[in-house]
Every structure is written in C-alpha cells, then in structure tokens.
Amino acid sequence: MLRITGPSIPLCDGVSRREWLRAGGVGLGSLSLAGWLRARAGGGSGKAKSAIVLFNTGGIAHHETWDPKPEAPAEIRGAFGTIATRTPGLRVGELMPLTAGITDKVAVIRSMVTLDNAHSTSGYQMLTGVPHVPLNRENAKPGKPNDWPSFAALVQSIRPGRGGLPAAISMPQRIANNNGQDPWPGTDAGFLGRRNDPWFLDCDPSDPYFSMPGGDAKGGFHPEMLGLRRSLLDQVNRRADAILSPAAGSTFDMHAQRALDLVSGRQARVAFDMARESDKVRDRYGRTKYGQCVLLARRLVEAGVSLVQVQWANHDKNKPNGGGWDTHEKHNESIKGWLIPPTDQAFSALVTDLDERGMLDETLVCWISEFGHTPRFNPKGGRDHWGRVFSIALAGGGIKGGTVLGASDKHAAEVARDPVRPCDFLATVFHCLGHAPDTEVRDLENRPLPISRGRVLGEILA
Image 1 (cartoon, rainbow, N blue to C red):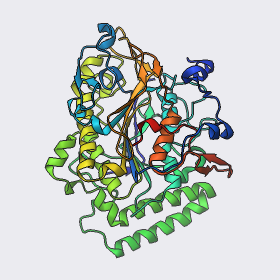
Image 2 (image 1 turned 135 degrees about the vertical axis):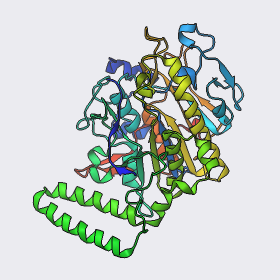
Image 3 (image 1 turned 90 degrees about the vertical axis):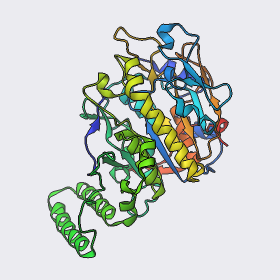
Image 4 (image 1 turned 30 degrees about the vertical axis):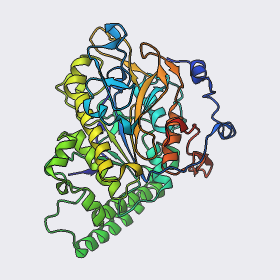
C-alpha cells in the first residue's frame, strides 16, 4: 500500500561567504534579477517532456564512481580500481560495470560545488539552486529566509498534472535528518505555498502487495462507490471549514481532492500497477526497494508525470551507516556490498530501458546528491561530507552523451576547472524541460521571481 506523505529518510547530524564568492570566479552573491539576466544563457528550448531525478541521499562517493584518482595515494584513491567506458578517455570506478557500458548516453559533471558540508543546507542548495543562509547548518529548519521552493515544487507550479496524477512526485520517503524528525528545507514549495508541494509518496514498490492509494479494493472502482466517497468528502470539508482556519481548510480540501482524483483516474491506477511489468524488466532494475522505485518512476513519466524524484531507499539499520550513503564508517565495505551495485544496476537499467522504448530523448535522467565525500578516509574507515567538489551525471532529454564537463584536482578535493553551481544545474534542467531560466513564478505575496538564476550548461547539450 502507498501513502501520501509519510516518514522520512534518516541521516546523521564552516565555509565563509567570501570563499563561496571566490569559487568559480563568478559572484555567487549576485542573486539580483538584473545580475542574473546579464549572465543567463539562452531560453528554454529543450527536448524533454519529463525528468527523473535520482537523488543519492547521503552523498555520491565520487572517488569510487565518476571521478576516480588511480594515481593518488592509497589513503585517497581507496581500495578499488577503475574501468574503461564507452566514452574514450573516461574511466569510472570498477564497481560500475553496467554504467560503464552506457556512458555514450551520459554527460558527467566533475566540478559540482556547494562549499557546504551539511546534509540539510547543502541539500537545500542542490534542490533549490539557492545557497542556504548560513552555510554548513545541519538540521536546518524549513522556513524563512530559506524558503525557496524545490525544483520539484517549481515544476508542480508551472506544469499541469495529467490523468489524476500531479506534475511532480517525490518518493519513496521525504528527505529528513534524525530518523525523519527534521525535514530538509528546500524539499517543499516554500514561498509558493502548500498548493504547489510535490506529492510526497511513502511507498515500497518491491512489496508484492504494493498498490496505489485505495488500489486494493477487490471489486474495482465503481461510480457509485466514488460518489459516496465524494459525498463523504463534502461532509468532512464542511466540518473542517467550521473548525479550521480558512487556509488550513483550503489545504485540507486540496489534498483530499488530490487523493480522490488519484483513486478515480484510470491512468493513475495503471501507472501504479507494477504487475504489468514482466519479471525480466523487474529483475533488470533489481528487486530492491530502490530498484523498483526507479522502475515506478519510469511508469509514472509514461503516464504523464513531469518530474519524479527518487531518494535512496535501501536502508537497513543492521548495516553500517544504516545501509545508506552517509558512509562515516566502513566506507569500502558499504559501497561494494550494498550501495554502488544496486545503483549501477538501476541507473543503467533506467537509461537503457528508456532508450529501448524510444523515450530517452524526451526524458531527462539526473543522478545527483547533496555533496560528495572527503578525499581522505577518517579513522573509522569512512569518508565524511564534502561539498567543495563532487560529481553528478545526466542523460537523455537533450543532453549530449559521452561528454565530461569540469575537473577536480589530483585528489578530487577541489575544483580544478569549470566550476558548476547548483543553480547552473537547475537552469539546465529547466532548459531541457522547455522552460527558460527567467520563467517567472509568483510567491504568496504575488512578487515575480525567476525559476533559476543560473547559467544553462550549453557544453553538455546536444
């Protein structure tokens, strides 16, 4: 069974503004619209109808994935070697053999930088394109002045839903620290208001009893049943209006109506019916919670969802670091045992599956994270948080495969060339979706604001 809004993904618990401004040689403090307009590149003429964002909650281990340093000392390069890929001159970590075979469809960015080493604030920057105030503040709370909407919420606000489905979905849990007690800022609609929140789904598509909300009704969906549900909803709403504030009542009504639309829409029911996939396809993605979430993301964009964000899902409290990517201890054991192999499988399966279905050109795939991991191992054999440089990867949706943008230094510790900021990444995502970065949204006070103040990365566009 799937629920709307549920428990969150748990994670563990400074850099000066001057350093931030210096990074990349561009004024990262120049957040005025006029300054951005002078620097922006191009309009929104992308090919993508939708995007799937794989958010590697906890950090991408860039030394063992997209930016290995085989010539570095052992305490930096780690325990694993590198392998050649389909892209001449590009080598990746040896734990990514399946992904190595599809890099001709992938653009790698090796110079991402947030200059923030805290999950929630570096994550805020990657999700919104705006630096958190202040940087390096773990367990930061949502709200002013850090209430810029996530890119999923921006998509929800500027694109229509279809077939009872919303424009943007985030799953299988909302991102938060401390066992779900502290949701990250920048995961919701912020100053755009709750109406533009992406749908947060708590789900496990690998469960054999998985279904959409209300989808386990044995007798199917009958107009009479839905009519009774609507009548009940009207009665509840009238009661809510009497006891709640107008704003709270409006939000309640909105989410209840969304849920009812989801139940009544055939397109939505079909999208969530994982049994329609063959065993071969399900095995290809991996029978893990994460792998099946990635497969469900493909089904949702087929059904018309504009953006699906998938967080890391294979948590296990009996494993080091809770089975997640926040590898403060036993890094090598973790990435080899249960982190990189299922990610390699799911990412490569998604790109290949979309390509075989003729959907890759119109679906942007992003593998991103809030930051990378430290060049040196700590005394517990772990790598800690590192926002000074890390790597992400994009494919499909107008991206030029077989390309590498930027570079890190010899230890993958600092940006060596072509720094890329989160706002640049998001400007590129919106461009690929057909929205110019200067597309305006209006906040709750009706003030116009651009969806991004970054530069479209023309170097990786087809």
